[in-house]
Image 1: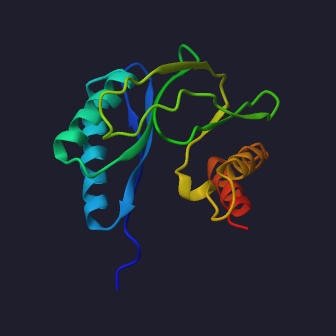
Image 2: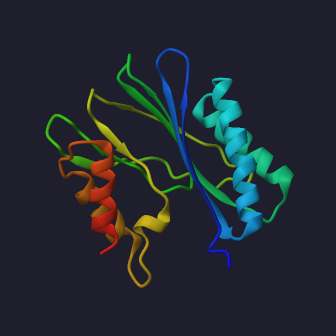
Length: 186
């Protein structure tokens, strides 16, 4: 028997100039069709990232693709480009939950205040870019709503718990992830 098949995905993509693209997305719904749509969107993001498509334009193109593939699918997607030379993140959001930024300097964490944007597949909605200064050692925590949504609770509670758990010191990124998952799965 197959387990629940979903449309969540994430990637890190190496870019020229020591930059890295970070992406997290979630096709709404479950089953093979959602998983297949996720695969198509994920491949498109990888291709556009390799062509150095700017974040807002990448989401617009992804939205156009999703609408051409069918009008029954919606997806959320957060796309960010990390530039260590400039000390900057450039982010665009298509209806996805915001990431948490943990500052290395003092261990503080904040839910980034990004324009939400419409989900991929809605069509005709512009996507905005946000730039955030970052320092060496800062951590960006990306996740899908499945980590922070609890039935019967406001998603704000889950996001607050994510912020709090992300701020705990960790020896490695794996340890940081383990801490967050343990805190949110209790």
